[in-house]
Image 1 (tube, rainbow, N blue to C red):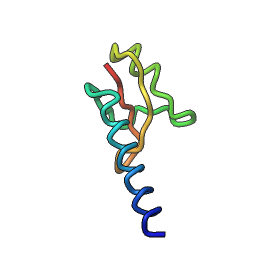
Image 2 (cartoon, rainbow, N blue to C red):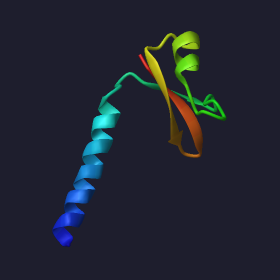
Image 3 (cartoon, one colour):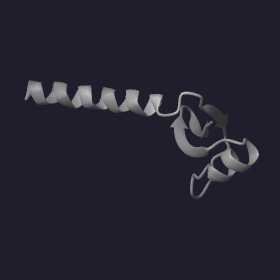
Image 4 (tube, rainbow, N blue to C red):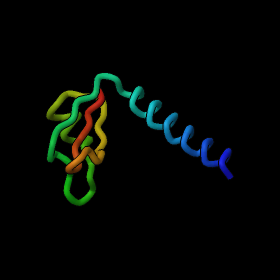
Length: 68
């Protein structure tokens, strides 16, 4: 039981590190997520000139993260 819990924690940490490194030059924009779909593609690609965008929860609200 203890070993499986340790593996679970390490997996979560590894996923967080991988996702953080996937877009090292990202920028957060507060309050720019689409309220219904939480889509940031249009905001990031058209307005910010980024390659892609994703809506993520960044305390205390949802924000767009744009990948350059």
